[in-house]
Image (cartoon, rainbow over all chains, first blue to last red; front, side, top):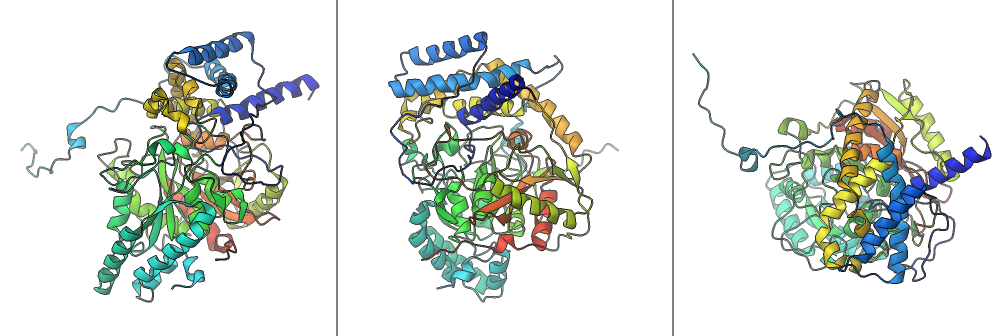
Length: 137
Length: 470
């Protein structure tokens, strides 16, 4: 594997990991233990920004920036600087996942995994089973 | 008081003693309650104990059993439920400060099922706030603080069923109920050295459970053996007209047969070669040994590979979008900023802005993935690999800046609603548990349970427990 390929993989891998972290995952991805524990009940106050944010293509970067602008400029949303920094990071982390999903080839006939399940009244309120035979003689 | 060694026994063993009246449900409940009061805070394992309810249920169980009305293997067994399941009149906090005083006027179906078979609720297990629905970067993302691993209290239990894992590992109850949207049963089971079943999507009713991602949420048991998971699953599985996500009656129900003929149907097992990119060296050794053991137990086992594609991306987009909807009021009101975790306070704002077209595309990719996985299961009944590539992580690790790893299997299993069972398969040199997971075709929970029971029939990893001084 040449160095360029290695770099590409490295970026992709990082983005892959990063989206896991940015996700609202019910499992925060486990991480390899590097340091002895100093358990705290509260998160450290100091901001720790990842140094290796994924490098996005220009169009993707523009979309991530626009998302950040949209989220932070809505009048109802008030964020301090630390929260804004986190939001910016999350917008960048989200983008590669959106890009990859968009790049995946789908045919028009590829339906979604979720389909409407019409509400059947008897399902909501189960009715007693009628024993009268409907057989035609 | 019941001896500690008895408290570490499996549900099956406790049940035998209860049925034969050698063990009193009241005494057992009192013992678990006392142990939970003493040790629970050490592990931040509980959101709250429910001693009044527990003792009432225990006395009822005792009376019934004395009268000869034995309801089955869970009768008189104390358990804990993750604090996102409603119990009428008792606070259900979802592990989150904005919901600290939340009380519902009805009880979750899964709790009702367990009550009906005579199980005794002794408390609500702590959890990651909103089950991680708004994202998190620290183990302390919980109203109850970080859950500490009974094997090493400097380490985390994993989330989001963090208290449930600690409770089972430390023998604070007979078993616990957890939930999984992505990894929240399998990972705590692995980190805590217990057995945990993530059932097929739709087999267990979620009525009364906090919704995170409607199309991915599952409820399942965590216990001290695969056999126990089988018994508990049989009690909680079933169609529920009040949860439209449950499967039809004939496909949701599960029957436990004690002799479930482990040898009657030889499982075709596929060892996954590409589930994890790298293993922590301490875990790699254990997994290698587990692979050899599996080869002996299942001589026809062959290698298998997961399909490649943007499955994690699709899963993330679906989960984030659905979570943003589940907690939209919390986000819009700004109360999401009361969450403990710095990421949890803001991630929902970004998730709300995921385009609907991308969400729908992710759902279309999901359908393609389902078909690919179905084809894979044509050649094997069960896939197997390590539950996690690392052992329990330090409590204070920053998950955003620390190392992490891709988890295609977690994405695939939860996107496709596949059943998975994690069982302990060994320990690292630092005495931290390592888990092995079995994954089956959707609906074939019986196969993963059979695989887990077969594995445990010839091993004793599930018998190990942490040395805990009272």
